[in-house]
Amino acid sequence: MSQPFLKKKYLEEIRPALIKSRGYKNIHQVPRLEKIVINSGVKATDDKSVLNDLVKDIAAITGQRPVITKARKSIANFKLRQGMPIGVKVTLRGEMMYHFLYRLIAVALPTIRDFRGVETKLDGQGNYNLGIADITIFPEISVETHKTHPGLDIAFVTSAETDDEGRELLRLFGMPFRRRESTTQTAAA
Image (tube, rainbow, N blue to C red; front, side):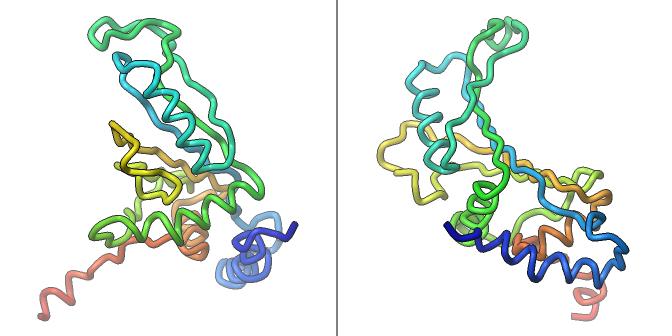
């Protein structure tokens, strides 16, 4: 089996470009993508079939069976009891991570209506969180067979120490960050 496209791109293009632009002395200082965590939640009042459908959908999107997450404590206002299933999550590493990232960047994100890029804000430690409102942007999901269209939370965990390093790493991977319009260009026009 051949190496994933984005892993090959990281080793041959991205890592040397980061070493050149940032001046790293050691190859282990170069930021890398460590894992991608995908999770989605369901309402506590939903029936079990909604959770089962979500498990099948996340497995189809990621190629890996997700773990069912359960409530840690009871909250009466949300009709939630301790131990009730409230969502699913999957952690991708290695080749599966690179395959998912490629499909997200090249196939899923461009299918969003009026897509102008994703937000550029990172979490302060070089990691990036992306929220997707509708799971049906992935071609593996059929729109007709779903009663509900849940969203996804995707966390990109990097070894970058600053937001600037993490943003540059993801930009080099092809993450379509939104371009900021400078105020001088708009004032001049």
